[in-house]
Image (cartoon, rainbow, N blue to C red; front, side, top):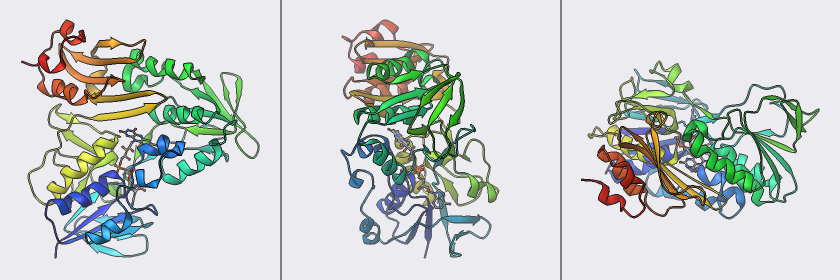
Length: 406
Ligand SMILES: Cc1cc2nc3c(=O)[nH]c(=O)nc-3n(C[C@H](O)[C@H](O)[C@H](O)COP(=O)(O)OP(=O)(O)OC[C@H]3O[C@@H](n4cnc5c(N)ncnc54)[C@H](O)[C@@H]3O)c2cc1C
């Protein structure tokens, strides 16, 4: 009997298990989930679940009994400790050995901790797991606390918005001149900066963080000589792909587990998907690692086909969304091509209802719709076409997006 083994119970691993069954694979599937939960998704952990408006049903991909009903062996709270690609076997922390025909590494990423004095004090936290979100909610939901967020990235800004919603005092400390500049560039990053300032966040940019202060727990953060008092410090300075298993097995690693466009790693019958994978993208012809929900979902589907020996190519346009206060945003596009691109705006940035297009020599390489309705598919079509688009027509809200393509 063939045996497919999946390591990691996030969106990539959970989706791959379902996709294997959807593709008609009816032999053995084992999903090894290191956390004590059935596979789950993380976006609600900084938004609706943290805010208390959503429960675990919005977090778990499927109820636990779904896996048993489909004949998928789900091992929760158990980590894989090694892979032996030549023996086609993995070992689990309880000593169990699983022989596989194909194995998927969907081990995700772990938040980075900032190497600052005081980082190990109680009250200095990161957010990745369900329990982290529960813990944050316990500390923030009654309001009246002082939260200092280190890092003006997506997770820090989402938690800041949710914490403000509970009536807490929030400061965000960002090293760059503009939050989210690394993801969006300064012009569009500032849209989010202004949004947070309007909602009463003390946003400190170009800030030099010196240390986290406290005797037995975090009491504040010293920034450019000023002490910002804190009951809680959230560190949101990015995440590192969980490559330890792959590295120990001798797989090729570079900013994640390197794969080809079919999500095959350098070892036979070992595959990778989701945050941990750094796949070759056939359209932009370079490796592109993405830490987004849709990337995990779609790569989870594609990798299932690849594991079954079917033709498969992961050529998605990266997609990301965020919700902060009353702002909803979707971003599609190729991050590596955005840095030198020209931004063309359709709509009104001041009222936060617009689409920003990143163009390179007239070709749209990325598009971000902010409170601009359901246009993401059309934006993706423009990107996918690779056609040169007239800048004035792109900018003109009276010209339907679909009419821009020849
Ligand atoms: C708070 C938060 C909010 C987010 N919001 C958004 C958003 O709004 N939009 C968006 O696009 N993206 C968002 N993301 C990013 C998105 O959640 C990730 O891209 C996605 O979780 C990646 O899924 P994954 O399956 O690759 O990895 P993960 O979700 O990290 O799952 C990997 C799992 O593998 C487990 N594991 C690791 N090693 C082992 C091992 N050796 N054995 C067994 N199990 C192991 C891990 O414990 C983990 O449970 C958010 C992330 C966070 C943390």
